[in-house]
Image 1 (cartoon, rainbow over the protein chains, first blue to last red):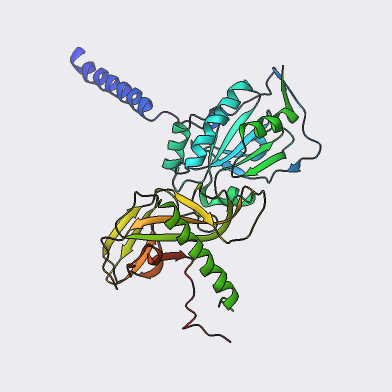
Image 2 (spheres, rainbow over the protein chains, first blue to last red):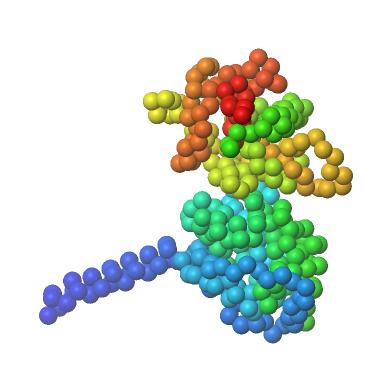
Length: 189
Length: 162
């Protein structure tokens, strides 16, 4: 009996170790669906802007393969929609400021990157290297970028919880501009 | 229908002259002063801060830092290739835009043509995207350095002027 069971036990153990090792190597990439808030934060009050223009709708393909309708991106918090790419030197500088802003708003603002990278691998690398706290969209074919009339990254849009564009800056907004626009639509308690 | 007018050609050539002048004045080539510089100018007229890093704007988004620019011979063999560094925004024209920080601009890259043969025509490709032909004619002076214009400038000596 023992001689018969030993190979099976070994095989099961080997399979278990292999699965563990693979999951460790191929864990979900940064910037995936799990970075999107699932509920409105309790530490903030949202006040959608009255004069905001509707943000163009789209289906977002995230770098982990999940697809999300744009309305789900901003239904719980205002969004800093940041058009960027791994090769964009100006974008990297502004990303640091955006990360600081996100930290200051303590979960009351979601940062969503729209990557213009040529490949999913590059977009996934951007998600990791940028240390962005929110989801990263792989804008394959540049469709979302075109819908927002962005000709070249960086560009930044603030979208409120009603799906309205509060402000948008081609070339990217300064930290002061972004904070001022956010303060119109969200107040952290 | 597809021919540019003389006026447009004049403006475009003026813009490229400005780009070349900027290159000369700054002495900055973006890739560390190559021995035989070739200027690649993306004529996208996008609004940028002059001197800022740039990439090709729509519809030239495929021209950016990290893109591999290849020079292919008529036989299709690879003669030379360069990975582009970030471009530099140069003024598209000489108009006064007042206090505007972002003005119409072109995105200028520089690559080294040392490995190319004078008088030879190459087909360019950006990544996997084949582009236009380019005949390498190294200049005697910095002002005469060869320029790759994207899209290419029309040749007024061969165009139909009807």
